[in-house]
Image (cartoon, rainbow over all chains, first blue to last red):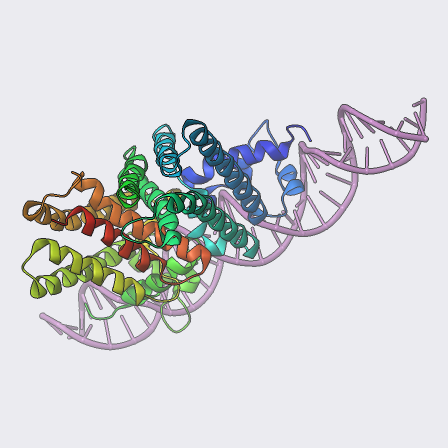
Length: 199
Length: 199
DNA sequence: CCGTCAACTGTACCGCGGGTCCAGTTGGAT
DNA sequence: ATCCAACTGGACCCGCGGTACAGTTGACGG
Protein backbone atom coordinates (compact mmCIF):
# COMPACT_ATOMS: atom_id res chain seq x y z
CA UNK A 1 0.00 0.00 0.00
CA UNK A 2 3.00 2.32 0.29
CA UNK A 3 4.18 4.71 -2.44
CA UNK A 4 4.22 2.25 -5.29
CA UNK A 5 4.95 2.88 -8.93
CA UNK A 6 1.25 3.41 -9.37
CA UNK A 7 1.34 6.48 -7.17
CA UNK A 8 4.43 7.80 -8.88
CA UNK A 9 2.68 7.62 -12.22
CA UNK A 10 -0.45 9.29 -10.86
CA UNK A 11 1.70 12.08 -9.42
CA UNK A 12 3.17 12.76 -12.80
CA UNK A 13 -0.20 12.75 -14.50
CA UNK A 14 -1.68 15.13 -11.98
CA UNK A 15 1.19 17.52 -12.69
CA UNK A 16 1.18 17.31 -16.45
CA UNK A 17 -2.29 16.35 -17.66
CA UNK A 18 -3.75 19.78 -17.06
CA UNK A 19 -0.70 21.56 -18.41
CA UNK A 20 -0.37 19.62 -21.61
CA UNK A 21 -3.50 17.54 -22.04
CA UNK A 22 -3.89 13.81 -21.65
CA UNK A 23 -3.37 13.26 -25.32
CA UNK A 24 0.11 14.75 -25.20
CA UNK A 25 1.28 12.43 -22.45
CA UNK A 26 2.93 9.33 -23.80
CA UNK A 27 3.27 6.18 -21.78
CA UNK A 28 7.04 6.38 -22.14
CA UNK A 29 7.11 9.83 -20.61
CA UNK A 30 4.90 8.84 -17.73
CA UNK A 31 7.16 5.91 -17.03
CA UNK A 32 10.09 8.25 -17.14
CA UNK A 33 13.66 6.90 -16.64
CA UNK A 34 14.48 5.86 -13.12
CA UNK A 35 10.87 5.70 -12.15
CA UNK A 36 8.72 3.03 -13.68
CA UNK A 37 9.17 0.97 -16.77
CA UNK A 38 6.75 0.88 -19.64
CA UNK A 39 5.73 -2.60 -18.58
CA UNK A 40 5.19 -1.31 -15.07
CA UNK A 41 2.70 1.16 -16.44
CA UNK A 42 0.62 -1.52 -18.13
CA UNK A 43 0.89 -3.67 -15.04
CA UNK A 44 -1.03 -1.06 -13.06
CA UNK A 45 -3.26 0.43 -15.71
CA UNK A 46 -5.05 -1.43 -18.40
CA UNK A 47 -4.76 1.48 -20.79
CA UNK A 48 -4.67 5.28 -20.85
CA UNK A 49 -8.40 5.54 -20.17
CA UNK A 50 -7.84 3.57 -17.03
CA UNK A 51 -5.13 5.99 -16.01
CA UNK A 52 -7.36 8.95 -16.80
CA UNK A 53 -10.10 7.49 -14.65
CA UNK A 54 -7.76 6.99 -11.72
CA UNK A 55 -6.28 10.47 -12.08
CA UNK A 56 -9.75 11.97 -12.26
CA UNK A 57 -10.89 10.17 -9.12
CA UNK A 58 -7.81 11.39 -7.30
CA UNK A 59 -8.22 14.97 -8.53
CA UNK A 60 -11.89 15.08 -7.61
CA UNK A 61 -11.23 13.54 -4.21
CA UNK A 62 -8.50 16.07 -3.42
CA UNK A 63 -10.68 18.93 -4.62
CA UNK A 64 -13.59 17.77 -2.54
CA UNK A 65 -11.51 17.46 0.61
CA UNK A 66 -10.01 20.87 -0.02
CA UNK A 67 -13.43 22.43 -0.40
CA UNK A 68 -14.77 20.73 2.68
CA UNK A 69 -11.81 22.04 4.66
CA UNK A 70 -12.77 25.55 3.60
CA UNK A 71 -16.36 24.93 4.67
CA UNK A 72 -15.12 23.71 8.05
CA UNK A 73 -13.04 26.85 8.49
CA UNK A 74 -16.05 28.98 7.62
CA UNK A 75 -18.14 27.12 10.17
CA UNK A 76 -15.56 27.94 12.80
CA UNK A 77 -15.63 31.60 11.92
CA UNK A 78 -19.35 32.25 11.81
CA UNK A 79 -22.74 30.90 12.77
CA UNK A 80 -24.69 32.83 10.20
CA UNK A 81 -25.31 30.70 7.06
CA UNK A 82 -25.09 33.63 4.69
CA UNK A 83 -21.91 34.85 6.28
CA UNK A 84 -20.48 31.34 6.09
CA UNK A 85 -21.27 31.21 2.42
CA UNK A 86 -19.49 34.49 1.89
CA UNK A 87 -16.48 33.28 3.80
CA UNK A 88 -16.29 30.09 1.79
CA UNK A 89 -16.37 32.06 -1.45
CA UNK A 90 -13.67 34.34 -0.10
CA UNK A 91 -11.53 31.32 0.70
CA UNK A 92 -12.18 29.70 -2.66
CA UNK A 93 -11.08 32.87 -4.38
CA UNK A 94 -7.96 33.02 -2.27
CA UNK A 95 -7.18 29.42 -3.01
CA UNK A 96 -7.42 30.04 -6.74
CA UNK A 97 -5.14 33.02 -6.37
CA UNK A 98 -2.50 30.92 -4.68
CA UNK A 99 -2.68 28.27 -7.40
CA UNK A 100 0.23 27.62 -9.72
CA UNK A 101 1.11 29.40 -12.94
CA UNK A 102 -1.22 27.59 -15.33
CA UNK A 103 -4.04 26.20 -13.23
CA UNK A 104 -6.71 24.15 -14.89
CA UNK A 105 -9.37 21.63 -14.25
CA UNK A 106 -8.94 17.97 -15.10
CA UNK A 107 -12.68 17.56 -15.33
CA UNK A 108 -12.97 20.25 -17.97
CA UNK A 109 -9.88 18.95 -19.73
CA UNK A 110 -11.38 15.48 -20.03
CA UNK A 111 -14.68 16.90 -21.26
CA UNK A 112 -13.30 18.04 -24.58
CA UNK A 113 -11.39 14.85 -25.22
CA UNK A 114 -14.32 12.50 -25.00
CA UNK A 115 -13.32 10.04 -27.62
CA UNK A 116 -9.89 9.59 -26.11
CA UNK A 117 -11.49 7.92 -23.14
CA UNK A 118 -14.13 5.33 -22.50
CA UNK A 119 -17.54 5.49 -20.90
CA UNK A 120 -16.17 4.87 -17.40
CA UNK A 121 -14.18 8.10 -17.53
CA UNK A 122 -17.22 10.02 -18.67
CA UNK A 123 -19.27 8.53 -15.88
CA UNK A 124 -16.61 9.48 -13.33
CA UNK A 125 -16.76 12.98 -14.72
CA UNK A 126 -20.53 13.12 -14.40
CA UNK A 127 -20.30 12.09 -10.77
CA UNK A 128 -17.68 14.76 -10.15
CA UNK A 129 -19.91 17.43 -11.63
CA UNK A 130 -22.89 16.41 -9.52
CA UNK A 131 -20.71 16.40 -6.41
CA UNK A 132 -19.59 19.93 -7.15
CA UNK A 133 -23.12 21.15 -7.52
CA UNK A 134 -24.35 19.46 -4.37
CA UNK A 135 -21.73 20.75 -2.01
CA UNK A 136 -22.38 24.35 -3.05
CA UNK A 137 -26.09 23.73 -3.15
CA UNK A 138 -26.03 22.70 0.51
CA UNK A 139 -24.53 26.02 1.47
CA UNK A 140 -27.01 27.92 -0.68
CA UNK A 141 -30.00 26.07 0.70
CA UNK A 142 -29.12 26.73 4.31
CA UNK A 143 -28.35 30.33 3.46
CA UNK A 144 -31.69 30.68 1.68
CA UNK A 145 -33.52 29.27 4.66
CA UNK A 146 -32.03 31.97 6.86
CA UNK A 147 -32.37 34.70 4.26
CA UNK A 148 -34.40 34.06 1.09
CA UNK A 149 -32.68 35.46 -1.98
CA UNK A 150 -34.19 38.46 -3.66
CA UNK A 151 -35.03 38.38 -6.46
CA UNK A 152 -36.01 34.75 -6.08
CA UNK A 153 -33.46 32.58 -7.84
CA UNK A 154 -33.11 28.93 -8.78
CA UNK A 155 -30.54 27.61 -6.34
CA UNK A 156 -29.47 24.75 -8.63
CA UNK A 157 -28.53 27.22 -11.31
CA UNK A 158 -26.84 29.42 -8.75
CA UNK A 159 -24.78 26.46 -7.56
CA UNK A 160 -23.84 25.58 -11.12
CA UNK A 161 -22.81 29.16 -11.70
CA UNK A 162 -19.88 28.87 -9.34
CA UNK A 163 -18.54 25.84 -11.17
CA UNK A 164 -19.21 27.47 -14.51
CA UNK A 165 -17.48 30.68 -13.55
CA UNK A 166 -14.44 28.87 -12.21
CA UNK A 167 -14.07 26.44 -15.10
CA UNK A 168 -14.74 29.15 -17.62
CA UNK A 169 -12.30 31.54 -16.01
CA UNK A 170 -9.63 28.88 -15.90
CA UNK A 171 -10.01 28.51 -19.66
CA UNK A 172 -9.81 32.27 -20.12
CA UNK A 173 -6.79 32.56 -17.88
CA UNK A 174 -4.95 29.78 -19.65
CA UNK A 175 -5.62 31.16 -23.08
CA UNK A 176 -4.79 34.74 -22.19
CA UNK A 177 -1.80 33.53 -20.18
CA UNK A 178 -2.74 35.69 -17.27
CA UNK A 179 -2.98 34.97 -13.61
CA UNK A 180 -5.82 35.45 -11.17
CA UNK A 181 -8.73 35.48 -13.61
CA UNK A 182 -10.52 32.68 -11.82
CA UNK A 183 -9.98 34.29 -8.41
CA UNK A 184 -11.42 37.58 -9.66
CA UNK A 185 -14.39 35.84 -11.22
CA UNK A 186 -15.18 34.08 -7.96
CA UNK A 187 -15.08 37.43 -6.20
CA UNK A 188 -17.53 38.78 -8.77
CA UNK A 189 -19.78 35.78 -8.18
CA UNK A 190 -19.47 36.57 -4.51
CA UNK A 191 -20.77 40.09 -4.95
CA UNK A 192 -23.68 38.64 -6.91
CA UNK A 193 -24.43 36.30 -4.04
CA UNK A 194 -24.06 39.06 -1.48
CA UNK A 195 -26.63 41.14 -3.35
CA UNK A 196 -29.07 38.25 -3.63
CA UNK A 197 -28.83 37.32 0.04
CA UNK A 198 -28.65 40.70 1.72
CA UNK A 199 -31.49 41.68 3.96
CA UNK B 1 -12.41 30.30 -54.49
CA UNK B 2 -15.49 28.09 -54.75
CA UNK B 3 -16.25 25.18 -52.45
CA UNK B 4 -12.93 23.45 -52.73
CA UNK B 5 -11.74 20.41 -50.87
CA UNK B 6 -10.36 22.76 -48.29
CA UNK B 7 -13.84 23.93 -47.38
CA UNK B 8 -15.17 20.40 -47.32
CA UNK B 9 -12.53 19.45 -44.81
CA UNK B 10 -13.20 22.51 -42.68
CA UNK B 11 -16.90 21.69 -42.69
CA UNK B 12 -16.20 18.26 -41.34
CA UNK B 13 -13.89 19.58 -38.67
CA UNK B 14 -16.37 22.17 -37.51
CA UNK B 15 -18.93 19.41 -37.10
CA UNK B 16 -16.76 16.88 -35.34
CA UNK B 17 -13.98 18.68 -33.51
CA UNK B 18 -16.19 19.89 -30.69
CA UNK B 19 -18.04 16.60 -30.43
CA UNK B 20 -15.04 14.35 -30.35
CA UNK B 21 -11.99 16.51 -29.85
CA UNK B 22 -9.29 17.35 -32.36
CA UNK B 23 -7.16 14.52 -31.17
CA UNK B 24 -9.76 11.94 -32.11
CA UNK B 25 -9.99 13.14 -35.69
CA UNK B 26 -7.68 11.27 -38.01
CA UNK B 27 -6.59 12.65 -41.32
CA UNK B 28 -8.09 9.63 -43.03
CA UNK B 29 -11.48 10.34 -41.54
CA UNK B 30 -11.38 13.99 -42.44
CA UNK B 31 -10.53 13.07 -46.00
CA UNK B 32 -13.40 10.70 -45.97
CA UNK B 33 -14.17 8.51 -49.06
CA UNK B 34 -15.57 10.37 -51.99
CA UNK B 35 -14.49 13.68 -50.62
CA UNK B 36 -10.82 14.43 -50.48
CA UNK B 37 -7.84 12.18 -50.55
CA UNK B 38 -5.23 11.99 -47.87
CA UNK B 39 -2.82 13.76 -50.17
CA UNK B 40 -5.43 16.42 -50.77
CA UNK B 41 -5.50 17.11 -47.07
CA UNK B 42 -1.77 17.73 -46.89
CA UNK B 43 -1.96 19.80 -50.02
CA UNK B 44 -4.17 22.32 -48.21
CA UNK B 45 -2.92 22.02 -44.67
CA UNK B 46 0.64 21.65 -43.59
CA UNK B 47 -0.37 19.55 -40.59
CA UNK B 48 -3.14 19.15 -38.07
CA UNK B 49 -2.16 22.30 -36.21
CA UNK B 50 -2.63 24.20 -39.42
CA UNK B 51 -6.08 22.71 -39.77
CA UNK B 52 -6.90 23.57 -36.17
CA UNK B 53 -5.85 27.15 -36.74
CA UNK B 54 -8.03 27.45 -39.82
CA UNK B 55 -10.99 25.85 -38.09
CA UNK B 56 -10.55 28.14 -35.12
CA UNK B 57 -10.44 31.24 -37.29
CA UNK B 58 -13.59 30.14 -39.03
CA UNK B 59 -15.38 29.32 -35.78
CA UNK B 60 -14.43 32.63 -34.18
CA UNK B 61 -15.40 34.57 -37.28
CA UNK B 62 -18.81 32.91 -37.43
CA UNK B 63 -19.33 33.48 -33.71
CA UNK B 64 -18.38 37.11 -33.98
CA UNK B 65 -20.70 37.75 -36.88
CA UNK B 66 -23.49 35.97 -35.06
CA UNK B 67 -22.99 38.09 -31.96
CA UNK B 68 -22.84 41.30 -33.94
CA UNK B 69 -26.11 40.38 -35.63
CA UNK B 70 -27.69 40.09 -32.20
CA UNK B 71 -26.28 43.49 -31.23
CA UNK B 72 -27.72 44.98 -34.41
CA UNK B 73 -31.14 43.53 -33.61
CA UNK B 74 -30.94 44.96 -30.11
CA UNK B 75 -30.07 48.36 -31.53
CA UNK B 76 -33.17 48.21 -33.67
CA UNK B 77 -35.34 47.38 -30.70
CA UNK B 78 -34.18 49.97 -28.20
CA UNK B 79 -32.27 53.20 -27.80
CA UNK B 80 -31.47 52.73 -24.15
CA UNK B 81 -27.97 51.22 -23.70
CA UNK B 82 -28.93 49.22 -20.63
CA UNK B 83 -32.02 47.88 -22.30
CA UNK B 84 -29.97 46.99 -25.36
CA UNK B 85 -27.58 45.05 -23.18
CA UNK B 86 -30.43 43.15 -21.64
CA UNK B 87 -31.86 42.35 -25.05
CA UNK B 88 -28.54 41.09 -26.31
CA UNK B 89 -28.21 38.78 -23.31
CA UNK B 90 -31.73 37.56 -23.89
CA UNK B 91 -30.87 36.77 -27.49
CA UNK B 92 -27.61 35.09 -26.56
CA UNK B 93 -29.46 32.88 -24.13
CA UNK B 94 -32.03 32.01 -26.79
CA UNK B 95 -29.30 31.23 -29.27
CA UNK B 96 -27.67 28.82 -26.86
CA UNK B 97 -31.02 27.17 -26.24
CA UNK B 98 -31.49 26.55 -29.94
CA UNK B 99 -28.02 25.04 -30.27
CA UNK B 100 -27.53 21.38 -31.12
CA UNK B 101 -27.48 18.42 -28.76
CA UNK B 102 -23.88 18.62 -27.57
CA UNK B 103 -22.82 22.21 -28.03
CA UNK B 104 -19.30 23.17 -27.15
CA UNK B 105 -16.69 25.76 -27.77
CA UNK B 106 -13.75 25.16 -30.05
CA UNK B 107 -11.74 27.76 -28.21
CA UNK B 108 -12.16 25.97 -24.89
CA UNK B 109 -11.57 22.63 -26.56
CA UNK B 110 -8.25 23.79 -27.95
CA UNK B 111 -7.23 25.26 -24.61
CA UNK B 112 -6.87 21.92 -22.91
CA UNK B 113 -5.00 20.34 -25.77
CA UNK B 114 -2.18 22.82 -25.92
CA UNK B 115 0.63 20.53 -26.80
CA UNK B 116 -1.30 19.05 -29.68
CA UNK B 117 -1.00 22.36 -31.46
CA UNK B 118 1.65 24.95 -32.10
CA UNK B 119 2.11 28.51 -30.96
CA UNK B 120 0.10 29.92 -33.88
CA UNK B 121 -3.01 28.12 -32.70
CA UNK B 122 -2.53 29.42 -29.19
CA UNK B 123 -2.08 32.93 -30.51
CA UNK B 124 -5.27 32.64 -32.57
CA UNK B 125 -7.01 31.52 -29.42
CA UNK B 126 -5.71 34.48 -27.46
CA UNK B 127 -7.00 36.86 -30.10
CA UNK B 128 -10.38 35.15 -30.01
CA UNK B 129 -10.59 35.57 -26.25
CA UNK B 130 -9.72 39.25 -26.40
CA UNK B 131 -12.30 39.79 -29.13
CA UNK B 132 -14.95 38.20 -26.97
CA UNK B 133 -14.15 40.44 -24.06
CA UNK B 134 -14.09 43.60 -26.12
CA UNK B 135 -17.40 43.19 -27.84
CA UNK B 136 -19.18 42.68 -24.52
CA UNK B 137 -17.11 45.37 -22.90
CA UNK B 138 -18.35 47.90 -25.46
CA UNK B 139 -21.91 47.19 -24.48
CA UNK B 140 -21.08 47.38 -20.79
CA UNK B 141 -19.20 50.67 -21.12
CA UNK B 142 -22.00 52.43 -22.96
CA UNK B 143 -24.49 51.01 -20.49
CA UNK B 144 -22.37 52.20 -17.58
CA UNK B 145 -22.17 55.68 -19.04
CA UNK B 146 -25.95 55.87 -19.09
CA UNK B 147 -26.42 54.15 -15.77
CA UNK B 148 -23.38 53.53 -13.54
CA UNK B 149 -23.49 50.10 -11.97
CA UNK B 150 -24.13 49.81 -8.27
CA UNK B 151 -22.22 48.53 -6.48
CA UNK B 152 -19.36 49.77 -8.61
CA UNK B 153 -17.91 46.88 -10.58
CA UNK B 154 -14.91 46.27 -12.78
CA UNK B 155 -16.33 46.14 -16.28
CA UNK B 156 -13.48 44.04 -17.65
CA UNK B 157 -14.25 41.34 -15.13
CA UNK B 158 -17.94 41.66 -15.82
CA UNK B 159 -17.29 41.20 -19.53
CA UNK B 160 -15.14 38.16 -18.85
CA UNK B 161 -17.86 36.74 -16.68
CA UNK B 162 -20.16 36.23 -19.63
CA UNK B 163 -17.55 34.25 -21.50
CA UNK B 164 -16.66 32.34 -18.36
CA UNK B 165 -20.26 31.49 -17.60
CA UNK B 166 -20.92 30.31 -21.14
CA UNK B 167 -17.75 28.26 -21.55
CA UNK B 168 -18.09 26.81 -18.07
CA UNK B 169 -21.74 25.96 -18.56
CA UNK B 170 -21.00 24.28 -21.87
CA UNK B 171 -18.54 22.05 -20.03
CA UNK B 172 -21.11 21.28 -17.35
CA UNK B 173 -23.81 20.58 -19.90
CA UNK B 174 -21.61 18.25 -21.90
CA UNK B 175 -20.49 16.30 -18.88
CA UNK B 176 -23.92 16.02 -17.34
CA UNK B 177 -25.39 15.30 -20.76
CA UNK B 178 -28.13 17.80 -20.25
CA UNK B 179 -29.46 20.54 -22.44
CA UNK B 180 -29.91 24.22 -21.82
CA UNK B 181 -27.40 24.68 -19.01
CA UNK B 182 -25.56 27.42 -20.86
CA UNK B 183 -28.78 29.21 -21.76
CA UNK B 184 -29.92 29.16 -18.12
CA UNK B 185 -26.56 30.42 -16.92
CA UNK B 186 -26.68 33.33 -19.32
CA UNK B 187 -30.12 34.20 -17.98
CA UNK B 188 -28.68 34.14 -14.47
CA UNK B 189 -25.86 36.41 -15.58
CA UNK B 190 -28.53 38.63 -17.05
CA UNK B 191 -30.33 39.01 -13.74
CA UNK B 192 -26.99 39.93 -12.17
CA UNK B 193 -26.48 42.60 -14.81
CA UNK B 194 -30.04 43.84 -14.40
CA UNK B 195 -29.47 44.30 -10.67
CA UNK B 196 -26.18 46.10 -11.18
CA UNK B 197 -27.56 48.47 -13.79
CA UNK B 198 -30.97 49.24 -12.41
CA UNK B 199 -31.70 52.77 -11.34
C1' DC C 1 15.54 -22.66 4.03
C1' DC C 2 12.23 -23.09 0.53
C1' DG C 3 8.17 -21.76 -2.02
C1' DT C 4 5.12 -18.37 -3.38
C1' DC C 5 3.26 -14.34 -4.83
C1' DA C 6 3.01 -9.44 -5.95
C1' DA C 7 5.44 -6.02 -8.10
C1' DC C 8 7.82 -5.21 -11.22
C1' DT C 9 11.71 -5.11 -15.84
C1' DG C 10 13.13 -6.05 -20.80
C1' DT C 11 12.28 -7.30 -25.25
C1' DA C 12 9.99 -8.30 -29.25
C1' DC C 13 6.13 -7.44 -31.85
C1' DC C 14 1.67 -5.42 -34.11
C1' DG C 15 -1.28 -1.77 -36.11
C1' DC C 16 -2.59 2.84 -36.59
C1' DG C 17 -2.04 7.47 -37.45
C1' DG C 18 0.76 11.66 -38.58
C1' DG C 19 3.78 13.26 -41.80
C1' DT C 20 7.01 13.15 -46.14
C1' DC C 21 8.06 12.45 -50.96
C1' DC C 22 7.02 12.27 -55.34
C1' DA C 23 5.26 10.98 -59.82
C1' DG C 24 1.23 11.44 -62.21
C1' DT C 25 -3.68 13.33 -63.69
C1' DT C 26 -7.28 16.66 -64.74
C1' DG C 27 -9.72 20.67 -65.91
C1' DG C 28 -10.08 25.41 -66.61
C1' DA C 29 -7.88 29.95 -67.87
C1' DT C 30 -4.73 32.35 -71.29
C1' DA D 1 -1.35 24.24 -77.09
C1' DT D 2 0.26 25.14 -72.71
C1' DC D 3 0.45 26.05 -68.10
C1' DC D 4 -0.79 25.91 -63.49
C1' DA D 5 -3.55 24.95 -59.50
C1' DA D 6 -5.88 21.42 -57.51
C1' DC D 7 -5.76 17.50 -56.73
C1' DT D 8 -4.90 11.56 -56.58
C1' DG D 9 -2.19 7.28 -55.44
C1' DG D 10 1.21 4.84 -53.50
C1' DA D 11 5.45 3.96 -51.07
C1' DC D 12 7.66 4.91 -47.05
C1' DC D 13 9.31 6.31 -42.00
C1' DC D 14 8.43 6.92 -37.23
C1' DG D 15 6.35 7.32 -32.72
C1' DC D 16 2.90 5.71 -29.87
C1' DG D 17 -0.69 2.68 -27.78
C1' DG D 18 -1.26 -1.84 -26.71
C1' DT D 19 -0.13 -7.11 -26.34
C1' DA D 20 2.51 -11.04 -24.97
C1' DC D 21 5.53 -13.23 -22.34
C1' DA D 22 9.66 -14.73 -20.05
C1' DG D 23 12.47 -13.40 -16.38
C1' DT D 24 13.88 -10.89 -11.79
C1' DT D 25 13.53 -9.29 -7.09
C1' DG D 26 12.18 -8.95 -2.48
C1' DA D 27 8.98 -9.66 1.32
C1' DC D 28 6.52 -12.98 3.99
C1' DG D 29 4.77 -17.45 5.66
C1' DG D 30 5.41 -22.28 6.66
